[in-house]
Length: 221
Image 1 (cartoon, helix red, strand yellow):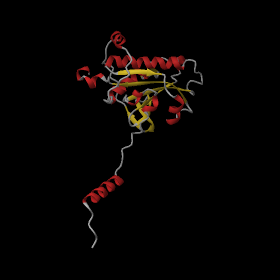
Image 2: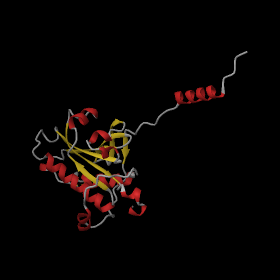
Image 3: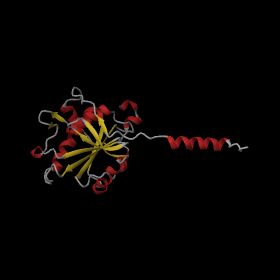
Image 4: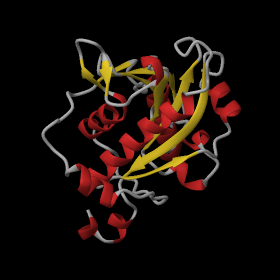
């Protein structure tokens, strides 16, 4: 006669079997973004009045529609017939790529397709800066210079990235999002971790989310 198992051991074995056969959802290799909502937002002068940097972020995730709007504002295609962008670039090289670090993965923004392309699964937000708050912001945008598209000429790269950053700032000001651009990034470590250092030079990163104040005061939303 086989000895009976104790209730505690039976529960442990049940959990172990369930864990052995469970599967974990991997992030999608491509996230199709909704079309940007072009009929919303404050006026330009109102957004300029509200523009500021914030270093405290709520844990509330940014909805996909809001993320689509934000990225389009930063460097989206506003003239499909010529692939023209919302931000200028020297000699129209469009050499700045936007990489987006989310909780589930690190993605490249494909402006032409309106999609996020998975570069690497996993949460690397904490690697996008040296300040403690970078791990708290739900969205970290990394602005990087594509050496091939820029033909190795870095003279204008910082200016072109700054145009995009200001677009992101103005969208955040218009929609009540918190943001701050940051130069304090270990670019070598981040580039190696996400395997883009062979093709790109990271210029800076920008944190985006909802203000921490809304957690302390729901009326602040």
